[in-house]
Length: 42
Image 1: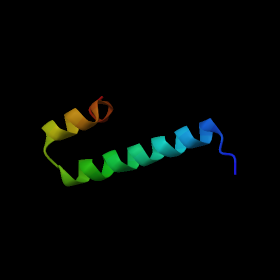
Image 2: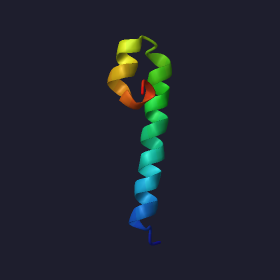
Image 3: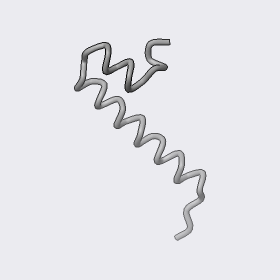
Image 4: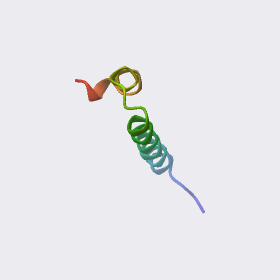
């Protein structure tokens, strides 16, 4: 089965975002939020 690079990248991206989100929920302090996801404070 052939997987397109775009599909693989988008899948990796969604996994990364999901992972970041779960970390953000676990580490509630604002400082860790700032380190993990600068765009969240923008």
